[in-house]
Image (cartoon, rainbow, N blue to C red; front, side, top):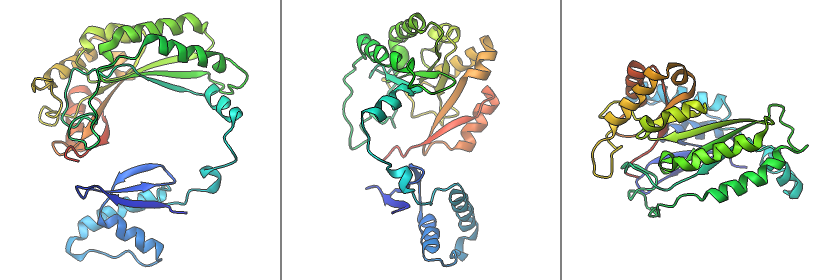
Length: 297
């Protein structure tokens, strides 16, 4: 059974996929060389012309190897038995994370957006909002399962997430779902709410999010230059607006900011994790979560 596969895009960007870890990482010639040497049980070849770079990627390869990135996927993990009604019932009854994509609308037009025109599989968003009755239908179906003997989780902890588009453009949906859950829960479960936002509307809705103890992930790519792909529909930068909203939360709700707020960056050709982290640590006292994208892919 294959352990990993190397592939590249039409733009010749190289990637590696681990069947064991189910992760895709950026790759290069070094990783392919080290992996082939391991498979052939030969010594890792050095690169005399660029020994420093060679050693850097060798250490990175060895770390990935240590955590099982290059291990075989076991047959038991790959497929064990058949999926039947009982398996599906059990999985649904123990579902601990439910995310609603509540709107396709967004008040930004980020250049690298997955739904943007730079991607070959671009499909124009239709600006739909998720219907509240559909969310209620999902919850009405799941709550009896969560409350059944099939739910073996001792914590009874369930995360409800809201995603978009920009989910705060459909704040009424969020408010109604939260109200519904509070009404039907009767203290049987530990419901926790989470939202991922571009931060533009936080000044209007932060009181509600704090009151309901939301986990809040805000997207910001670092300093003003780092953040320059994140623009409004008229092309104007969103940085100052979002930065001010983050500072507003930090000032007015310091404990909430400390425990409930995370900052997320997309890594691209106008920033890097070190530079972006330096900015967010200085002004917000928080490190970034990071996702890599090639905006010209």
